[in-house]
Image (cartoon, rainbow, N blue to C red):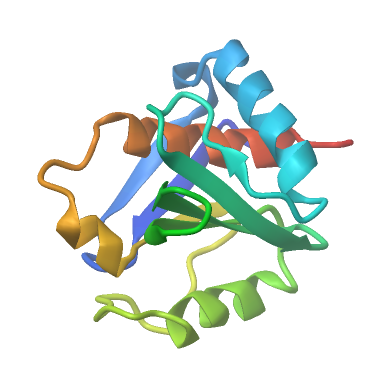
Length: 153
């Protein structure tokens, strides 16, 4: 199994490495528990975040896409969409979908995904409305990537 994941921010093109040993086991366990509900179609509180952040998403084979929302269930705005590709094949489709459905300008090329495995973060318009983007969001995204890599339920 890989020890590092590539993490790409689609709006800037910035690529970083996320080492497994940098993510706490309890954070991964909390995110995996959240994934149980999200993958059944739920809208759940974001683990590790403050009140008012919700998560929903879907998966297809080795691909995961989730959106982090701010606000109530009835009135929420998207903050961040994160995609995680564990392996080849449908990863290109996931990469293209992250570009196709973007509501903001992206710095990355829709036809040039990075080698798998990877995490792609796409800030959403709601992120521009936050006075300060909470620091936990980046850690949450990194944890989500590793939780999906190890997810086997």
